[in-house]
Image (cartoon, rainbow, N blue to C red; front, side):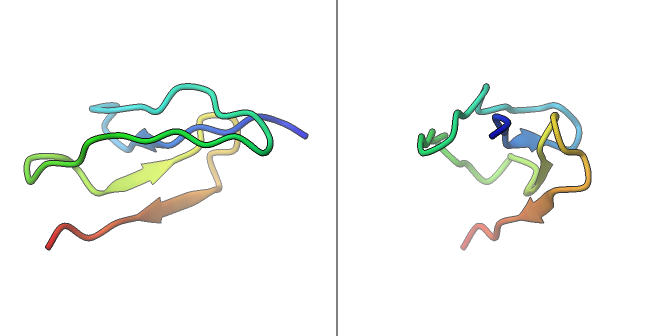
Length: 51
């Protein structure tokens, strides 16, 4: 299977490459953009909410 990333839409942050069955994490703060995508699969998009 191909690796994935979680990359901020404006390239403000990036998890780096995430291999199959692996995970990565980032520290979220209120200034961060909340929309992101996978650089290997640009159609894979998501967002998160900061409360």
